[in-house]
Image: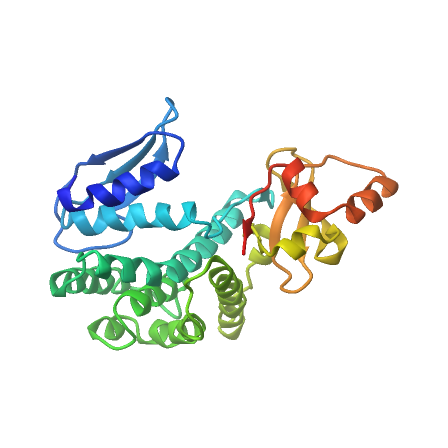
Length: 303
């Protein structure tokens, strides 16, 4: 592991209960993409970070570590607790939600890499080459995958540059999304969550404008809430609608009970219930939100 990353690694390790291992092994392609590293929970309950392309280990490993740092610092982790019954559809929803979530976070990660001295002209050139290579894949009409890649390029490189010529239609669509990330700083968990929800909604608009079906990520993807102390004291029904979804809870295998925010309509948590009487649900609705979140060990961040 590069010596300059040791303080960042130590900081991240302190925030995680399981030991973190780093594996650096692979060729040097000469370009950078955000698919060159991944995390994996091992059978021994260690968390392993693998860097599979050694073009710029300091950049790639710091990028992965900073993802972990922001999650541990209260930025809502993206979760998937329900399934539609069609694995192919689920994979599409998962891929879109994750790519948009990551694009929102990458601006903060880039700022930290600049602060740590891990960003320079070489990194920018290697990233640009990676985007050009990815976006140059032949496809007829607007490509969802290339639009998501173009959005990431907007965040990391900028809306102007040689990469835009590789996918001009996607670059134009991505710029509509990028504007959402430029509206306000995403330097708090609350601001970040709000931007991700807006990004998902705008992406659905882009899809429908080009004849694609919208995603169901307002229901399918769980984005844990960022709440004030006052909101935590409110009754559940003052903040959320509990929907008995047609989708299945991955844990209970029954129809999922999805809590969607009254303000933004986004899935904030899924209650692992199997079935209950109307009276029991009325009682649940009247309980303080914090009490319910804690009882079911559901993730949330306090503003």
